[in-house]
Length: 244
Length: 158
Image (tube, rainbow over all chains, first blue to last red; front, top):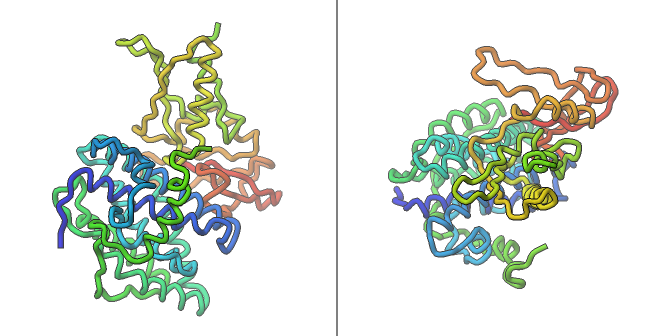
């Protein structure tokens, strides 16, 4: 399977990944298992939102139809969102959240690093900025995967279950797109190397590859996305242009 | 008479109010656009999602208006990406005095990776530990001193 995206599609897709990831992580605010983790997840959400704003603003300019970051974030329906399915999955327990963040960061770090060297100046600038933040996200998630995996019997069981549950959704991240500024397929080796090392240290088993759900970049999503959007968009739709 | 550069350089960071945007390296330049003669202020965010950027822009406009330049243009650039190495010596001293441990220099091509101890900004002890790599703002981590037991913020090297 491969894709052929325009620069607009590509930029919008990356922006949507970051935006939806930010919204999901933000759901932990005031609910995380400890104060420090609450702050950490909110900070990572903020980084994702920062990248999303830059990417969506640029996507709007590329499209040339006068849509700004807010129009793209708040005034599209679920079928118009281009994010990968991984980021829209519900948070589940803390282990599922960490598995999702771990896989996302292990993909975003090589992605943004490659983007920093791509021919498109705007994307290169965004990549150079975002990769520094992604390095912290990956570090943080890796520590938790190790701590939970190599922790108690119960934490190990739940971390392994989380990895198994989320694993099918990582494959979509690397769908080949040879014409894109960065072909996601070229990032898989970096991802595999880091993920395998951390899982081994965490005494976790890397799941066998099997089912590979996809469709996010084509606007075909799980049933979870529209609920997320309803919450994210309700204020803006009820009070267009609201500010504070 | 305050120059436009001096007026902008005196704007304090809205989240860390002991240092200016100039000392933090957020302020990149204050120039006149040769074509239009308009004053152009260029700034760069510490983190992409930094929520203080809107306030910083407003504060720059206010400072310039007070100095007699009400119609300056403010440009936000993302490249080169901000680094904690851009924080000035006076900025580092002020951070430390306010109880925020300043960042170590970012490793640039060094052969031997160095991890420098973060000194407690209260008692100066190097016996410190990280509590969380994310802190009260996007640019800070939470640390604790093992000597005096005080928790403190540490500006993360970036």
